[in-house]
Structure formats: structure tokens, C-alpha cells
Image 1 (cartoon, rainbow, N blue to C red):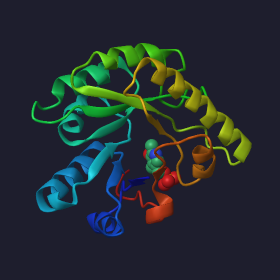
Image 2 (cartoon, helix red, strand yellow):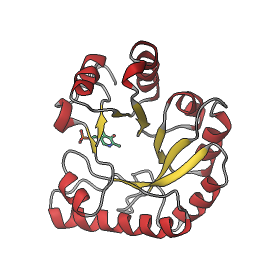
Image 3 (cartoon, rainbow, N blue to C red):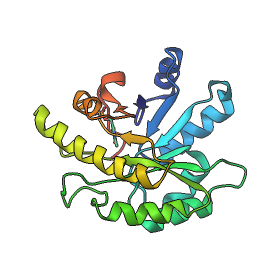
Image 4 (cartoon, protein in one colour):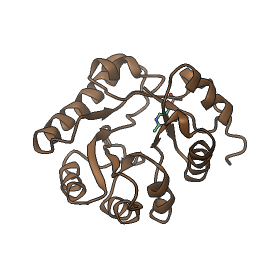
Length: 206
Ligand SMILES: *Cc1c(COP(=O)(O)O)cnc(C)c1O
């Protein structure tokens, strides 16, 4: 389980750590980078694994490459290339997931089922990235069968990728509202914010 701590204070992260949680997800570059830097300086004993799960603009790749262990939201070649180029030499490769648009909605980011394979090939050739799998944020629907169908589609994409790339073992899908269906479809990382930390306050984000 990835605890999604975006907008939440450092104290909330520390509290989750006391229950044994060590994987945290952040969406916003500036907020995420400052939390990672603070924990590396003041709480390096906790050995937290940090996942970037927000949209990435190409002019923001450097701080992401310099701070995060994982990136879930790779959706184009340029971002992959820049993250690899900008990864500091003393850090291990970034563990990356390709974001797939399972519902085909034009408003959502992510590649379609065919583009996944092209992007996977490129990532597999980059020295400072390790391709671990795929992630998606499916259309927000409340009925279980529709949720399950979308997640099963993503699970198939991951299975095909894994045949070609042995490093692929990760299926990042499921959030507070649809984690049960995601788990049934084989999710290996559920990204949970609200169900752990409560509702988010965006009043200082606008
Ligand atoms: C905010 C966010 C989550 C967590 O959502 P909840 O509904 O609060 O569990 C998961 N994944 C991504 C990509 C997010 O942006």
C-alpha cells in the first residue's frame, strides 16, 4: 500500500510511519521535493520510499529525478529521457511505471494500449530508469463491475509487458474509492490517500 500524503503535513506522515508505513506518494513537485528533503535530513533512519504520482511537466523533471525513488506517471518519451539524463550518478535507477489511459478519455493523461509498448522499449534502453510496470487512474465510476473491467484491462497490459521485460512486476491501481476492485484484478500497489489521512484541504493550492 502506498500512502498518498499530498497536502498532508509532515506530522501526518510521521504518524503513519509509527504504524509501520514506509511508502509514501506525492503529487506536486514542490511540496513533494521539500518533504523528501526534510525526511532525508531529519528522519533518514525511517528509510522512506518516495513515489511521485502526479503529472510531470518537462521543465520539472530535474527535482523529481533528484529526489524520488519511483515515478508512476511516465506518459511520453521526453519525460523518460529527461528523468534518466537528470538522475544523479550516486543514486540507483528510478523505478518507473507507464501511465495508461484505460478509459480512453481525452481529458485524462496516459498513453493508449499500443503506445505502451513503444514507450516501454525506449525506457528499457535508458540507463537510469528501471521499467517496473503500469499505472492508471480510471474513470471515476461507482459500480463495481465497471471498475473491475477497467482494472482487468490494465492487468492484461502488464502481463503482456512482463513477457517481454523481466523487470516488470508492478500494477499500480486502486485508490480509496475503488481499491476492492483493483485488488481483485491483481493490483500490486494501491494508492490510498483519503481512507488513511481523511479529506484533503486544497485551500492553499489554488
Ligand atoms: C490523490 C491520488 C490518490 C489518492 O486518492 P484517494 O482517493 O484520496 O485515495 C491516488 N492516486 C493518485 C494518482 C492521486 O493523485
